Each structure stands twice: as C-alpha cells, then as structure tokens.
Length: 400
Image (cartoon, rainbow, N blue to C red; front, side, top):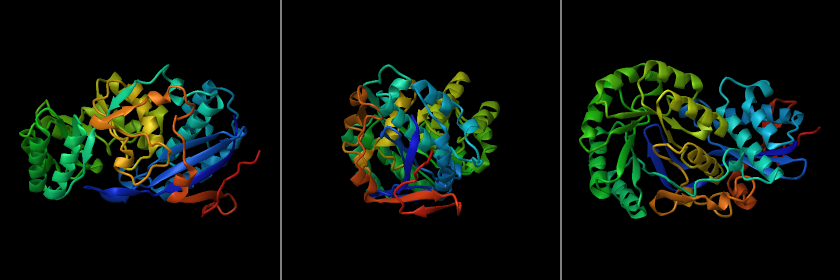
C-alpha cells in the first residue's frame, strides 16, 4: 500500500443549536478531514478536531503540520496490516520536522491510514485489534450551560431519550449552576448518574466549596474543576474533598508526561481519553493501559461536533477498553445539521449505539458522502516552494 494523493479539508458543519461551556461557545463544528488515496485507488479518511484551549493546537497549526508531513508519506510502502501498525507505533521516528505538539495531525494521519489499510486488505479496522466489536455501547447525554428555561428543555429531551448517565456543563455562575443541577436531579431522578464538567473555571477555594454543595445533590464526579495551568492545586483539592469524590482530568491530560505527573503527584482519580487530543487510537490505548496499570480509572470523551469518523474510532476504544466508566460522543444528527456519511453513526434511545454493521465492511464501516463532505468544507494543499498552505486546491499529489 502506497499513498499517492491526499486532500486536506477543514469542515465547518452548523449545529442544530449552540453549545456552551466555560471555555468556549460553539455553533458549528470545526474538524479537519484528511483523505488519502492509495496506488490501488482506495481512499481512507481520518479526522481530528483541534481545540486551542485543550492542547494548544489550532486549525491553522494543524494544517501547517499536516502540510509538512504528508509529502513524507511517499517514502512508505506498507504491505500488510502488521506493517501499518508497526509504522504507526513508530510514528515520531518515521517522520521529520514534527513540531512540539502534533497530536491532532497524528490523529488525522493515523485514522486515514487505518481506513485505507482496512480497504486495501479487506478488513474492518476493528479487526486490527479485535476479532469482533461489542454489539452495543452506552453513551452519556450532555447538557451545555445556560439559562434555566433552556436547560429545562434540554433536560426534558435527555429524559425522553432515556440516558442513564448525564454530564452537565457548569462554570462561574455558581448560584445558577446549583439551580440547574437541582432541576436536573428533579427531572432525571436519582437513578441517573449525574456528573459535572467545569472546564477549569474554578479556583481552588471555589472548587472545595462547590464540590461540597453539589455533592448534596448526589453528584460525586467532577471533570476538570481547576485550570490546566493550576495543576499543582489538584493534589491539594484531592486532599480537601471526600474520598468518594471522583476528580477527572481532561485539559490537564494531553500527553504522556501529564499522565506521569498525576501518577507521581496524585490529584486525580480518572483520566478523560479523547482520541483527537491524544493523537489517535494507538496512542489513546497505550495511555489507557498505562493509567489502568497504576490503578486509575478512565472515561471516553469527545470534542463537540465530531463526525462519524471519530465516532467509529471511539467505538473501537470502547470495545477494547471495556471497563470505561462512561463514553461520550456519537451525537451525529442530534447535534449536527448533517454528517459527512450516507448513514450517520449515532446514538439511539438510551444512549445506545449499534456497531453490528461494522462486522464485515472494510475500513471504518461508514460510507463518506463526498457531496456532504464538500458542502461546508475548505480544501488545502501544501506548497513546498513557499512553505505555505494554499486554499481551494483539490489534491496534494505525492509523486514517487
């Protein structure tokens, strides 16, 4: 398998409604879709969703990184699934000129190569790891922060959809957050697991106070309560709260060195895995196994607005890591006005997602609709002469 052509697209798909949290407000997705073509004509698709407030990467920095990396792929000739996996395991050693942070570019390249390899060698991608997928997965509902009236409408939809786990976004509007959480508990009942995502909005004193107040509503799971820049406060917070409280880190956990810091210093009990921020399936699984080795729990997260490509990758993680405490993502047309596949991969009632259609189809098991893909996309290629990206070019042919 040789990669001979590629297309880099920035896809901006409008949401059904705006999504809010303490670090950002978003009404469209902003993903990078990488399409690669092999010498036999197979096409593979990868996706990443760079967020500056998570990893420090932007769409522009990721585009620049991809533009510098993609021409190097002309040197690889992968003759089997095993050779593809070996190449991915040595990603950094195989490529030159990588910036300090390149997780999102790595994710897009890995996922595109896996999809292409699945089609090239006529295998579903999940069979690179597993003989078969788990037939169903249970995903969480998510409620963005907002005024009580809009929050009530979202909660009623969540209840009607039958979710058993729900995450509520909170921030600095302390009284409003407590009111919304009390409403959530009243609408959803005591049998639904409620957790909150702070997105780093609290100071240490606020976190101690809010965790105590929210725990009275039966909430014991707190995601990213402190800013990533205040990492040294996490061990102090852990000592100050009840031992039953679960502290989950997201923005504070983007690299292996972050994982090792928390293992050494404490301050968290759970790591939030996101395929895009951690650089693809292979790296996510490696970090998951390291966390579990040291007794830490893991949950699967997502960047809001992911398409069916990252959803498919997430279901593989969920099938392999079968002790995840929760899964997020797969919102599909519940959030997006359209996906980029003929049949979006998305959750059904109760947060369940059926993966049975993956069993025999090569690659991701989803069919990309190029009309939908191009509907809200800008296309780029890398100009080696000017060392810059030019827009609205269809391909970046890799000559041999």
